[in-house]
Length: 147
Length: 416
Image: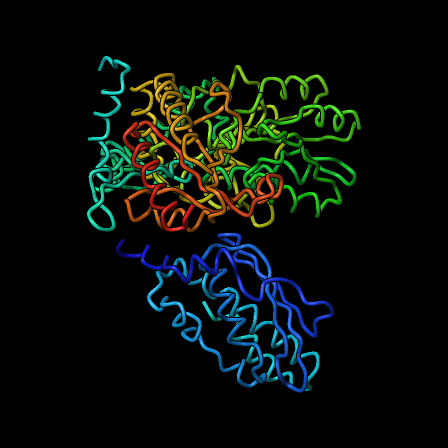
């Protein structure tokens, strides 16, 4: 296989069949939902946050293999991290893990939807629980401009 | 040209479409199966637009010089071609718009605002494109009216009992539906719906965007009150479409856009309107694309809409047969070929349509994946998305074979 379909390697297909951290958290400290208007991919992320640390994270929703694999990897990266470390997660931390750095533009939004939801969840949490609206707004902007 | 209907003749038509001879990705011949989205353009259409800009370009309906006369004539000729194509007697009932979306919005604004009041009901269907849902949501929300739906059965056909119940409320002021579903290909039983509405005195709007390019449509026969379709889905350019409105209804409508060309006299504080249809064509229109649209209608007329329909029935039948052999592939909608156009929506096992589309794109195949601007229908089918292959006159059985073969690759990657 060559070209764009190279992205469908073993790991992506496996994650799409058996996503990790898939499901819902009861009484999450923060939850956020977003969707890609053009393709209909739709992701929810729930988090438990304790002493500025993500103690648990789960996602659910519908999406293509790319979307599901990236959501799996992202939630795995996030789990156990401090909020500051979560903020620092960049696009390529997710894409690189799956060899998707050169994903074509039309599929980038599939790969990064969950990161957008995560950043949105974070600003929602900061806005609600930490008295720093400037910080929350900055994150909000970052989430909006992700792709 | 005497047109002999055979697959060979249709195969020859491919030479008229320059894009069909290009390759994509790694030297793969293009297999274009996204005709429900937009169609490719023959040389005749491309040349007509080119010729207009090279030799006749001027603004219409205004100046007296030679070019302006030529441009006006070319523009108005398309109106006559359309009248002939969909069998309308009165050319004044034909309004040029950007496309079906603008046509429906025009009706919602210019007819809906003066006619819809609090408590009224507008009826649409579960298999509409967003363009035949959202304008009515906007209107009913503004007017405190209600939007109701004719449901769809598991075969992809409308449940007309729903319409009877809604009509019985006595509050229905408009029934709007597509003549062919852009996702399932279902051909709506328009005659039955219109007959029910007529006997209750309710006007009807038909979204003909998917039907007009693929089958003979006769508006005098149909008897609806509003009809909309787009040029780009029938070999014409993008950005041009038609709204037809029965004159007795058109005369009760407010203007849509205010500006040049739609006026008779403008004074400081009042204006009188131009004659129909110009009252609804404010501003300099899309002249070049109207001319191109005319060339597309000539092209289709020469082949004959019945021949096109026959070709697509043959192709769709073949595609359904071949796709049904693929293990794990599910086709949505009716299997009754007389009730469906050349649109096939499917899902392949648990593989997301985006992944299907991307893998087969490597073989040069263009299919659409997603919700096809029909999220209400996706909800009804309980899926997030589907893959959709849709045919036109230049598609061949070979295109179907390439599609079916490419699905093997999907099965391989996803270990089906």
